[in-house]
Image 1 (cartoon, helix red, strand yellow):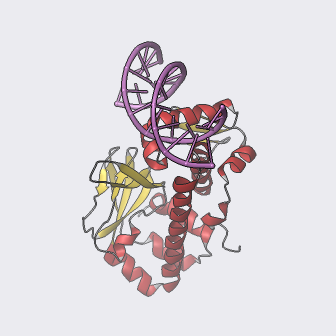
Image 2 (image 1 turned 60 degrees about the vertical axis):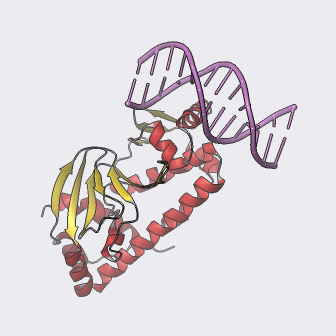
Image 3 (image 1 turned 45 degrees about the horizontal axis):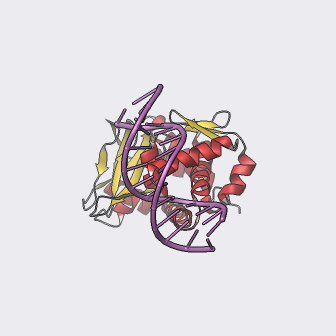
Length: 242
DNA sequence: TCATTAACTGAGG
DNA sequence: CCTCAGTTAATGA
């Protein structure tokens, strides 16, 4: 398996933990089936019982849930290096959907292989544990965001979180990065209507805080944006020594 | 199809 | 009375 498949994953895990060479070797030697999928492709659906986990190698994906009335809540945004459905390893039935935002390259890893790696390399199991708990911390922050913050803070928070996470794996250049979501999709993530998302983006732009054009975010005034967002990156736990 | 903007509305502080 | 956010509608890219 070429290293590009696990490159982003290893960068991220290296950031949140101290791995040794054997841990890295074990992760690199997992049997991974790589597939290309189109944008807005359902990778796994609510109620399905996958026998493998999905590693995002290239592209973006979201986890979401849709109510009977057809209203969708986007629960999390996933970037290369993420294993969004790692919970399926120990919870058989999916309770939400996993959908690509962009054309994506995904790696599928059989549950059996991950379980075996966890048995032979307990340290890797601990690192996956830590990663999963950080995932939970991000959900807590997401709840606070959607439940208690006003629209401009919500938007600013989402943008800053994504920037921090993307920086670990690479693609943030001169304060710019890809946010491949329509304003309607951002609304589903933030609990706002698309019209209000548009108003909010305009407000942030007029305030000189950030720009959002053709799926690209440019952060113009990060200190002000952080203050507005009430952004404290502790919850990302990217530095294991803290 | 998606983004933009205005006008209006109601809830709630 | 003011702020925030949803709805509707018109317009443009």
